[in-house]
Image (cartoon, rainbow, N blue to C red; front, side, top):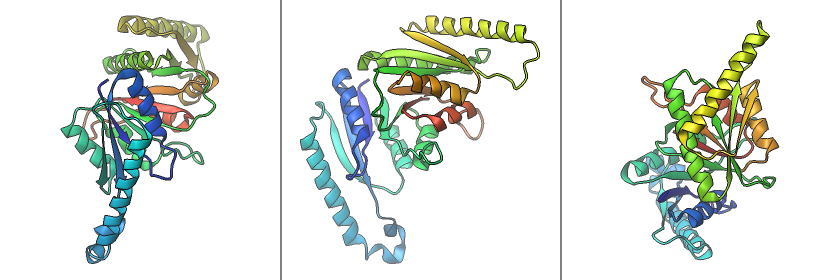
Amino acid sequence: MQNILVILDKPKHEQIALQRALELAEKSGARLHLVSVVYEPLASISFLSGAVLNVSGEMREARQKWLGEMQQKYTLPKGSSAQVVWHHDIPSWTLDYLADNDCDLVIKTAQKQFGRGGFGSIDWRLIESLPVPLWLAVSTHWVKHDRIVGALDPALDNPLHIELNQRVLAFGGAMSQQLGADFETVACVPVPEEIVDLEAFREHTGALLKAVDQVIADSGVSCSRTHFVTGKPAAEVNRVVDRNKARAILVGRGVRRGAKGFVLGNTAERILGRTNTDVVVVP
């Protein structure tokens, strides 16, 4: 991992994304590019744009001053950079930046909406569109173990799912090694409302467990433990993460061919919508 884009929080916030980036950069040697996005929506209204010109200049100047103070407060890795960007849309700016620059990871503080679960609209757009892994960080003071959990798709009869599992394993293994964290995996087999043949279901589940173990073995990634559970994936996967007080969960973003391009699978969306810890989305 060589280059990390860090989307900074607004000045009044605690800069969780920056904290994660500094830790990862210290252990991996990666360069950081910090970006602080500022914008005044009134600037887009033509007959008001002249009136707010001075205000926008003051806003950018104030943000640039704050960013300079941040660079003095934190020691950035050699080769790192920082900039203030005047832009109305963070996801579209990020995509443009990634198109023109080499980047291995994007880190941003999550817009968690605990009242109704899930993430804010900016986060969902980043989740569904970025061509590189996205780390969404949250404030989780209850995390006690340096453990990262990768969610695997047990539908191993589909080559796309197998490839996605391999990408999750590869990135999770590398990230865990750089952070000095244990890497574990979890796979959940959905249980139908009514099991007609219990013995056949047990046999099928056992075969899936062996297949998941084989996928992990084939990846060559060191995995300290595999959690194999049954039930509703969103609930069971997050239960494993919460019970083991993991610092992050890795989820693969599936590929759906057609006009929509990259689309997160329904199961992954439900898992992300209920998670209480950091999330890394692997495309």
